[in-house]
Image (cartoon, rainbow, N blue to C red):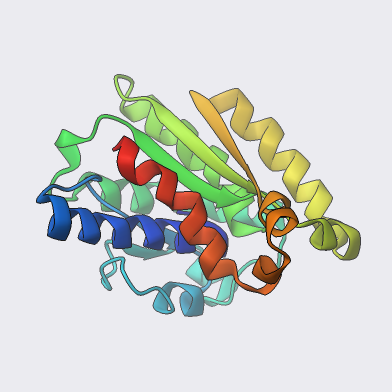
Amino acid sequence: GFGQCGGRIADEFARLNSRARRRRGIEIITGAFAVNTDAADLSGLSSIKADYQHRVLIGGRKTGGHGVGKINELGAEVAREDSDKVIDAIRTARRFFESDAFLLIAGAAGGTGSGAIPIITKHIKERYVDKPVYNLIVLPFQHEEDTEERTVYNSAACLKSTSSVADAVILVDNQRYIRKDFSLRNNLAKINALIAEPFYNLL
């Protein structure tokens, strides 16, 4: 998971993996990782292992661990510079070679996630040509599009770049969840759970 949004959804996958281990005696993923330029976002996760291999801080020299401030280009730049750090973290996971595919997750509107996901997708595809790389991209809420000018730009840049590198792009529309249940507007944790849950029975 890349950036705040991607990291939280990856954290949800890690939680579901623990549930599958408990209830079904199996693991549904071979590893869950959060990659971010914001150290506070990484430390706020609950299910992804709390070590430097699974919670990967990138761009520390440029951002001081405080994020990229929604600047997509800076997110892409630090991902380019620290791509080896990310790939090494994934590659050294205990069950890496059992992986059938990669699922990279990011919010389209943020800086780190939207900038980093196409860069890391490309690097993974170059190194592991036999494994498909899927991108799960979360589209912003309507109110974000209306109030934050970088939101539309970042989303467009992210969708354009991921569609040219990923084997498939899965789009998730945040707005759809609050159309169904307006109380979810301020409940991102619940939305993240709803995004990850359908994968539970697929895997």
